[in-house]
Amino acid sequence: MSQYRHTKVLIIGSGPAGYTAGVYASRAMLSPVLIQGIEPGGQLTTTTEVENWPGDTEVQGPDLMVRMEAHAKEMGCEIIGDIVTKLEVNSRPFVATCDSGKKYTADTIILATGARAKWLGLPSEEKYKGFGVSACATCDGFFYRGQEIAVIGGGNTAVEEALFLTNFASKVTLVHRRDELRAEKILQDRLFKNPKIETIWFHELDEVIGTDSPLGVEAIRIKNTTTGKLSEVPCKGVFVAIGHAPATELVTNILETHNGGYVKVEAGSTRTSVPGIFAAGDLTDHIYRQAVTSAGMGCMAALDAEKFISESS
Image (tube, rainbow, N blue to C red; front, side, top):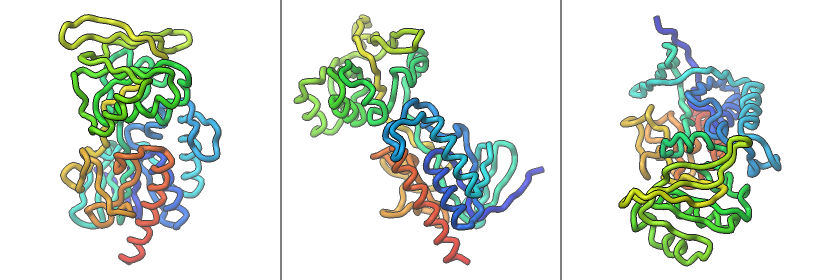
């Protein structure tokens, strides 16, 4: 038989947005419950050094998330290792059903399920993730100062990453499977004018080549999409930039979305199209996608939820 529990604030997701919402909702004496989801800690648990978190010159991504979780717990947030599989939002209180069978009713919901970088699905790509293969230039570009870097993709994400990486790299090779880019024309213009960037057309990534001890990238093997011919490009870093996918499975056909599926919130707030449901972090953010901006939105969501509860009582 299903077990029901009620909470004033149910937080779904456990990255910087979720844990920060937990801290602020706890400080507001709302006794929040946080359901961690399929990847406790979010995307930062798959990174190594983080050098852009204010107050830490360098911190390991997983360590930062452990600290954030501990902070939320210390403030009074109840953190539960489970996965929300269904939301019912047609009436209040809202109902969340978990993979374990437990059900939670909630006066408000804060969605902080994040977004996931799209990957190509190659075994070698998976092997070197965090050890030369990345999907975030602003996170990891600094580590390749003076090195040769490859970027895979042809849309806005790829071109923006390639341009950003020229701040560090000696050379950036953009590999695209077609003969024209999908990126905005102004971005293409900047790319083609940059002397540090070389574009290789009609090619796709076939394999990441590197060392095992220690793990590290040495080159990529690419395949011509018209002839099938293989060739190698030396590089120390590979940035897969084929876009991001917001984790919106829970709220498909429930909340209004835009820009390819990101949850739409009112300007200057975290309010979604359903009153009482708030969204924070990469789930809503197709522009910045940074830990610090996600944390800021988590704070906003908790304050918005507190105001909603106060005005509804």
